[in-house]
Structure formats: C-alpha cells, structure tokens
Image 1 (tube, rainbow, N blue to C red):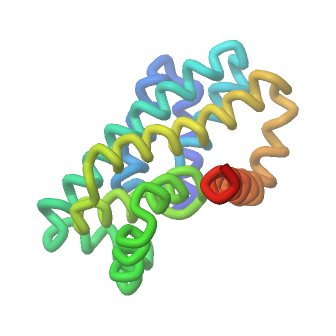
Image 2: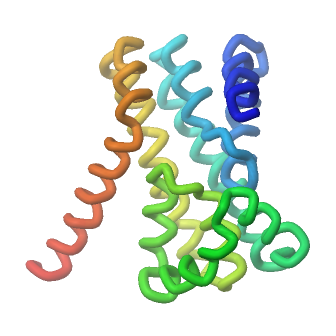
Length: 193
C-alpha cells in the first residue's frame, strides 16, 4: 500500500498542479498522511533546480499549517481522531513518553521531530494533547520544517539532479547528523558562553 501511495505522490510531479499537490502533501503529512513531502519536493526540484527554494517554501508553509491542524486534533479531538492516527503509526503506547519529552524539552522535542524522520504528525497531535504552548510549537515547527526542506532544496539547487540519489540514500543519516550538530551547538552556546 505504501509503495502505491509513493508512486501516486510521484505522479503529481508531472501535473500542472504539482505545486498545489506539494502544498497539500506537506499539509497532510504533518497531521495524518504517511508519505513525506520530500519525495515530491525532490522530484520537482530536480526537474527545475532554479525553483528549489520556492518548492521548499511551499513545503514549509504547508507543513506548518498541517502541523497546526495536527495540534488541533490533539487538543480537541484526541479521543475521536488523534488516538486512531497515533495508533496507525504504532506510537499508541508511546504517547505518555512523548508527553514526558514535551515536559522536559518543550520546543526541542518539536524541533527534532520536525527535522528528523520521526513521524512528525505524532508529535503535532501530542503537542495539542499535552497543551504545549502554541507559540513555541508553531515557531519550533516553522524553524525545523523549513530547515529540513531548505536543506533538501539547497542541495539540489547547488549540486543539481545528481544529488538526488545521495539524498535518497542517506536522508535519515543526514537528518540525524544535522540534528546532533544543531543540538550540540546550542548546548555549547548554553554552557560555554
């Protein structure tokens, strides 16, 4: 089923409505859909590297708005909708743990989930469920999701279509390394300066 969804997403790259599809995919993925928008972002940016940053903005905005919907699901509809979405991704028994991450790390939990391959939708729903400060949630989401999409778009813009296979192959590793560097730099700033 996931492979069919993946292929369906890629077909949108050939559509005259591809930018709207990218926005819709980014929006849906942040709250319930399983296929990450990076798939379509990469296809579109490889096709038109000069528009890679425009596509990254579209992904960022769609993801932020979708994350807000995810937050609303967790805040007001956890029992009816949110629990089903979280269970679908196999995180039903981990919601309490995610809540403890929010209690301890607040914006960092959102930012790390927003940038890495962790299912972001689970964290957006949990943020609403645990009533995380909405401003902190929105800012952390915007920064982390934008960093993720602009990193992908920037690599394609700088290195052209040849970088696609590298991104596809090492995306998870690159996301983890970037997150470690990001968190490490903040820890360094906090304790050294």
